Amino acid sequence: MEPIEIDDETIPMNGTSVEMPNRETVGASTGFGQYRPSVGQRVTLRIHDLAFGGEGVGRIGDFVVFVPFVCPGELIEAKIIEAKRSFARGVIARVLESAPERVEPRCRYFEECGGCQYQHLDYAAQLRWKHKQITDLFERIGGFSATAIEPVIPCPAPYGYRNRILVRSQWNKPAKKLNLGYVRTDGGLVCDVESCAIAEPGLNVALTEWRRNPPPKGGMKTLLRIPPEDWEVPEHSFFQNNFFALPFLVEAVRKSLTKAGTRHLIDAYCGVGFFSLSLADALQSFTGVELDSQAIAAARRNQKRRGHLHGEFIAGDTDAWLPRLLRQCDPKVAAVLLDPPRVGCQPASIQVLRSARPSQILYVSCHPATLARDLKGLCTDQLYRLESVQPVDMFPQTQHVECVADLRLASMG
Image (cartoon, rainbow, N blue to C red; front, side, top):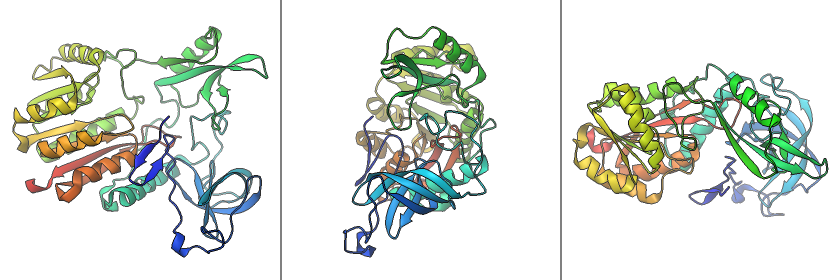
């Protein structure tokens, strides 16, 4: 997948953020330090941080080495597999000193399968480190204060929570068989997976059935999903993948709406109307906008089923509809709810919002880096101020975390 551009740095879609060493403070022999390891070399590292994306951070002098599946505080021996001018990547050869937070992974495919990054880390520690990663990104990319970031709300089910998985088939030529499962950590062959520790039990039943009746060839993707109760969701339309933590996400949005006194909601990227309809009892009116016409048709049926008739759903482009929708309501008590794809909002969308100037913008995102970037754009010239960011752990054992950011128009006081 294509990387995400964040100002002058590139953040790959796997979430790994590379903060380059300061050239002015590093020895002059290599330009980036007096010592740089080579591919295949083994080095001893003390892990002192956990970068956004899940890789542990160690240093040889001023030279940074990233290593996955380690815990901060550990002393490890790592084998270098990639060496750049400014950083290197390695894999664990040995753990010389374990951290107290290290636990036994529940899944036998962990470290081979690319689905999880943190099963070796105690869940309480996962929450602490995700909070630090979000705080660091917001300070570095957006220039925001750490005090705006609330503690991460934990998921009641750290395992067995996913209601949607994408599985793949790939022909394993050396073994002369189909591999059925997830893409491996190293991006090579598909990891053959018989069960998934973070998937709901019912989804593992579906996975077993899929493996009994596999695709006819490699290179095929299959979506396995447990549909939410009382919600109509078309096959390829979006719905949050964690039913256990979803109430906390809704409550975080509701709390921000109530605190601001919002009465009119414009739900951008509304999908099947989940947020609009879940919050309808707290609103005088709402409008959902979504390009996916099938999702809008489902949203209207979901609305009819719930009887929330004081709102509407529109199939169309958010940027085109937003100015006129805001003109139709009192901007002093109106909010725009954004829940875009992981790549975030387009620059044109940011400008539309800055021109329309709703009193409140709520931004729901599973990628803190693009969230910080977009919030920085919205807050330029102090047009908006960041009230709070509430992280919710919708993705335990993985690098991902969902956030609800609350922006207020600065002129509203």
